[in-house]
Length: 188
Image (tube, rainbow, N blue to C red; front, side, top):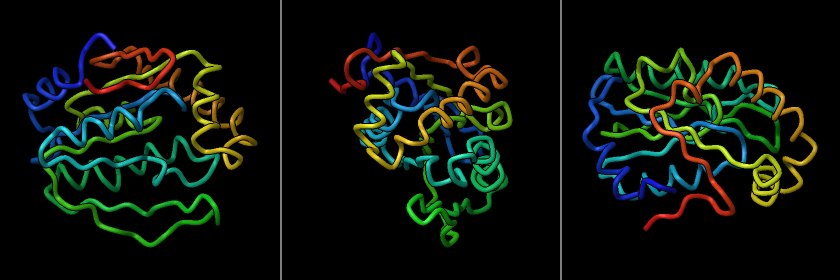
């Protein structure tokens, strides 16, 4: 990976919070790039960290852009104003929105998911980490992880990602770019 997990967590721990008292780290990039694995590793190593996967925020298979908006409106802006953040988790199997639930206060919030490094989110983010990899490998990883549920929607989701990433220029604005090879990033 070039930068080891221990080095990255030390670097993150030194960043100032920009969402009220909360330091927010966005782990963005296309499906199957290793975002969830990296976010979990960071969450384990950073004291007082909470990991939020944006899969909870997207309202269905056509909701990538709206999920990025929900992150700002429901989580980041309230945190910056000293209010409680909340999510309305999406139930992918029933294709419906769940009950609103509050997020616990935390020192560091690691947001994992496509679109979380949007321009609208940027003022609240202490760091944007961009993950990417070979498209065929990413697709295989995503389908291995989510199986038959994701398979019929892969192209539709990838199209939304390309459009959003081109508009947002997130990779170009990232503080750190990690290209994953054959495996998601591994901690050392």
